[in-house]
Length: 255
Length: 382
Picture (tube, rainbow over the protein chains, first blue to last red):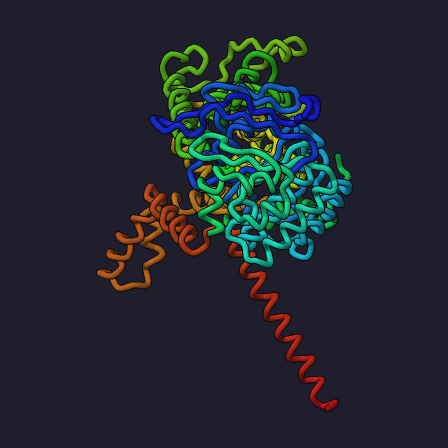
């Protein structure tokens, strides 16, 4: 792998919370256009790693480099404007607004940047953004409920809505934190289908997931995190065959 | 600027303007049809409209908005003293001074959210209030309040005409601002403010403010810098308050520090909640209701109460007068408290929620009666 087509480069990142070492010397390269899964037992540091990538947590040592830019002192909104979007473990949506508004708002962020005082135009006059939002809602299968309040959705639907909110930004890198946790089998399969369709569009994705069915049906590469360290990395087949991984993680979950 | 308003919005705007403009006639039967009170409705309506842009859209509860009202008043009176008795420059000065003040207070207070933000704004307002009484006496004239005097420079007015005897009147290019012209000036300002507020509510900017209220975290991770959005909303609402303050001075050219006291800040919170937080018309209604009741109830005295309860036997009359006396005159705040509690408990969405519920009830009735009708006409056909 050459370094040119690396979208995200996590270089020697460590992070401690009090005495707990959440991440120690984590090195991770994400290649453009791939789906890269990060798996590992609970408390392995997966969510911390994603939080470092979006600027929610500043690492103690090391750097995160996205698209050639060192993210050390960037604010969350700046990192998003560079092209990183994230789906959270518990859906972060605008519960008091309609689904359509939920999806239109990120489209404004992409078009108008981090701040624009636009009190002259009316939202109803933004036909282009509205059409795009409706298309995305169709994509995630929520178009029929578009006038409902986002807070009234089921958990699975909320997560799909959040995915739509990220997709409309056309990010260079999409981070997904357990996108199918707590979903029914049916919803999980719908999500897998959606992510597969996105894969064809060539969006780079990093996905944290517990559900091995999801991981193996989507991932091009897998990194295994345990106790804050990356203990294995490779293609799904390689990782599946790795004895260390079996011991730390897969052995338990596949019995 | 006028494009993109939906037909319903135009109807709402025209309806609102009409109601405001004909209020001298419609409110006369209720004992409110005189300019001094009608002006108050408009001025506090503007104050509440602006407050609602901050509180209703972003959810940031400021407890110090009266400071901007006071600054607007002082700036307006200084404009009368130094330049001209024309109200237009005074209003511009009032808005500008309050806006600048809001930039400073907002910049600092918006570093925190929730209750800490409220406390910071409250602290700033109380600081301004106390400064106006003490250190800033040269500007505010302390306890006496800032007033016009005979030897004010008034450079613009005096350049064109020799000063007459006695204190001059505020005017709008020659139209005296006392009585109904004063009311119509305030009404015009209220209508313009309502229009601007409606534009903000319907704009992408307003949408972003609502989104910040709903989930500020998501806004940050969606690429928005929420600080400037909040600061802009804060400054806009401060400017509305400044306008309200300068209109107070325009209709009665004096300014006192008591306009900045925390009770005045609390009052605008009550008005907004009473009318309906986050609704367009609600805050204006809330302001009108509170000012109306203040006027009616506080004017009752023992004499009028005795007259009201004269039909009761003597012993009962005394008891009734004593009881009712608690709620009127100086005790009218007790009435306000009771109304406020009832509204918050039974109608958390304020008067506007009440209206919406009534409209829904009426709609259901109409629908069911129509259904009955169609059912009735279907039966014979069978």
